[in-house]
Length: 165
Length: 193
Image (cartoon, rainbow over all chains, first blue to last red):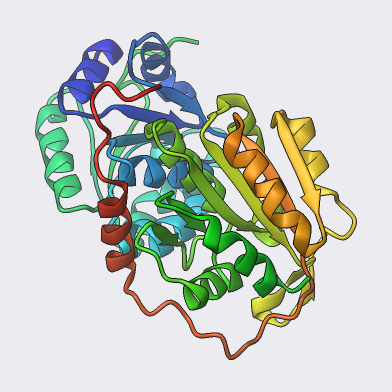
């Protein structure tokens, strides 16, 4: 398991300084740490696509944004990713919980859990599945993608981060 | 008042402020009248002009940030009004051109004929929310918002008489972004919060 605080520290040390999102229990530790981090805002968003817009504005205004969300919000975001981020080349680091992974979750998560990766691939959204072992490498990969001004998604399975709820 | 007339009133009042434009005729009308480097033309992602503008305003408190929005866009993302009200950036001015239709797709009816959007903004918590419907009211209302603390909301009721011959934005999306970022520049150290 990764320490949420340690991961937030790694993100801020890489220059990420604007956080928003819609909560997921799998990301509750990260959001809890962000709420306590001074000088770095975490803005609660009403819906995932509004968070995509918020991040786009933040990036163009000189910040480096991170969007935290459950994969249930991916559908809401696809138009924003494809008609904003990908065509304008506006990067955002997306930390997306992978509910329904392996088909073992509440019924509402099963279908999205199954098509989650395919949807990202179809939309041309680069991503990686984060593990305690690979987290530094995938974060480096994410930073390289963001330097190319493209979004990058870290898929988070249950149990990767400590939860606080 | 025609939408064009509202833009003609507002555009000469702009200096170097960043203006985030909603998709559809908002972008096209403004681009046609006066293209500006500090204009962000959102050509897709309907509904997100307000959240993009909010992101800019939160990260650049030293700049007055303007959103040119439409009724269809606001109705699609009404929750963003809550985000704006809750974060309460003093430097944000949210202007909505309300023609009560989705004009660029054939003037299908929107719901803003029944739902007073300025009241929604006020109830959400915008400290100032104004509504105008006459041409001569546009400039004083805009100046009031620009000179006061925001977030401010201005609903401009316009007739649905957009000229479909009006051209589209000719810059590529990447060009729009690069120009906009260059126009914004970097925040100066020690600038006010």
